Amino acid sequence: MTCASCAGSAESIVKYQPGVVNASVNFATGNLTVEYLPNMTDASTLQKAVQGVGYDLLIEDATKQQETLEAIHENKFRTLKNKTIWAIILSLPVVIIGMFFMDMPYADPIMWLFSTPVVIWLGRDFFVNAWKQAKHRSANMDTLVALSTGIAYLFSVFNMLFADFWHQRGLHAHVYFEA
Picture 1: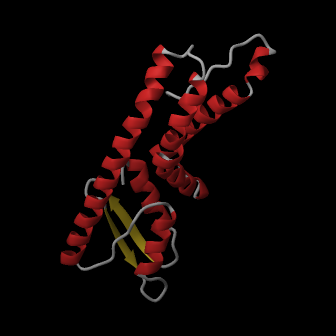
Picture 2 (picture 1 turned 90 degrees about the vertical axis):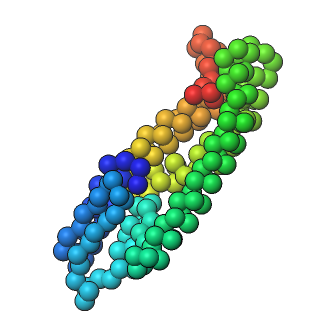
């Protein structure tokens, strides 16, 4: 969980499951404590509910859980590090062109070419998590990031492909791929 809204979302989805007596999330530790009636629900059902909003729920004994948590965190760290490196490599030309060479020929298609993998491939998790939150009528930081980058990207693609729409109205078709 990355924010208090995430913790609240996970807590509320579990609280409203049939058979759950009480649920509380400790945001600092990332732990979810659940009291439930075993004859009405089970741990795997609660795990699926939490996964439905985009979070993982580990159900194991304490020693095995610590090892599993460390492995998951290591894997997430490695993945995030690789994505960050790729995002920097692909975004640097976009920022340089967008700030200093925006009048060069084919600047817009070049920025589109470099920003598309950043938004679609490297930013995919934001959109997936935002969609999971939207399905449960909730929002978190992933929603904010997905909306802002998605709108800037789609608006820029529209302006690049249909520049005449703005030119006919006496306006310049600006792109915001570097945003």
